[in-house]
Length: 416
Ligand code: 9WN
Figure 1 (cartoon, rainbow, N blue to C red):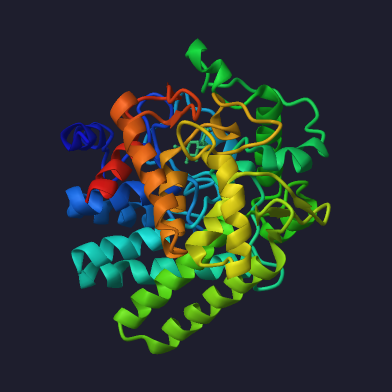
Figure 2 (figure 1 turned 180 degrees about the vertical axis):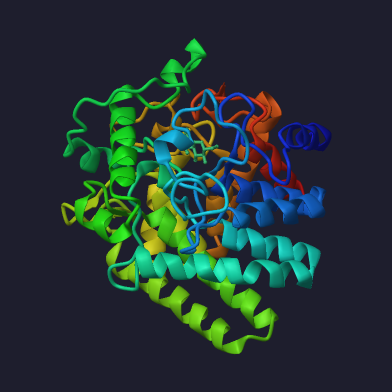
C-alpha cells in the first residue's frame, strides 16, 4: 500500500485542527469520519490524531450530543448548511460552533480509546474522558426508551444514508412540497452514484421538522415519522461503552468503569435477544414508529459482531449469510437483496469504514479466514483504484469522490 500517498491525501484535506472527508463533496468536519481518520492517524501522525478527536469534541452540544457536522468554516454553497439547521452560537444556545442538528454512530469513543492505546498520552485521556462520558450519557438520556437500545431520527445519522433498510419508514411518510437545490450532484457523473431525489426530499423534510421543533428530542420522539433503532449505531454504542469503561479503569475511576461495563452488557444482550433475525441470519434494525423490524440484508446487520453480540448459534447462522455477501469479486457489499444497486452509495457499493468494522468484528468472533478476506479485498481495491469513497463489489470500479479521507486513513491503520 502506498503510505506516502495516503499521508498526502490526509495532509491536503487537513484544516485547522481537523480533516475534511473530501475536498469536492464534504468540506467541513464530519463526526464518524473524524473518528476513522483519527484511527489511521494514530499510527502516522499521533499529534494530528489527538487534535482530530479534540476538535470534534469541541463541537459538542451543551447537552452532550456530538454533531454529525461541525461548520468550522464558511458554508457558502453547501446544502444543507447552517441556515437550514439553525444550530449554534448566534442561533440557539446549543454549541460553540454552528453544527447540524443530528449525530452519527458513536465511533468517536472507540477511536479515542484507540488513539490513547497507541499514544499512551494520559493528558489526552483525561481531556477527552468528560466529553465522551457526556456523549454516552446523552445517548441514554435523550435517545433510549428503555435504557437498553438507542434510537436515531434521521437516515443521515446512521451514516448509511440511502440504505434500503430505511425505505419502509421513509415510504410511509409524505414529505409534501419541499423546495431546495442539491449541491452534491453538480458533477453529472455522480447522478447515478448518489442518493435519489426521492430520498433527498425526505432527508430535507426531516431537517425542517427538527428545526421547527427546536431540536427538542422529546417532541421529536413523538412527532418524527422516522425513529429507528439502528443495529450499527447500537453495536457502536456497545463499543463506546466498553471503551469508556476501559478508559475510566485506566484513569482509576472504578465506579465509572463498572457502570459502563454493565451498560455495554445490557445493550449487547438486548441486541442479541431482540434484534437478531433468525430467518435472514443477521441483525436487523427496528422501526419504533410502526413498531416493526426492518428486515434487510444490510452490512449494518453484521456489525454487532464487533460488539460480541451474537451467541454461538446466532454466529453459525451468520456464517451462512456471510456467503451471500462474499459472493462478489470484492467484499463486503453494503447491501445484498432485491434493491441492490452496485454503483449507488449505500445500496450495494463496498465502503472501507464498514469493511474495517466488519473485519474487526469477525476477528472478535474468531472468524479469522473471513476477516482476512475482508482485509485483502479492501487493500486490493485501494491498490487498484486509489482512495475512492466507495467501490463496485462486482467490478471493483471506484465510485463517489476521490482522495477520500477515511479510505486513506484506514489504509494506514490496516498497514500499521
Ligand atoms: C451526509 C461524510 C459523510 C459520511 C456518511 C456518508 C455521506 C453525507 C452526504 O458522507 O453522508 O452526512 O451528504 O451524503 O453517507 O457516512 O459520514 O463523508
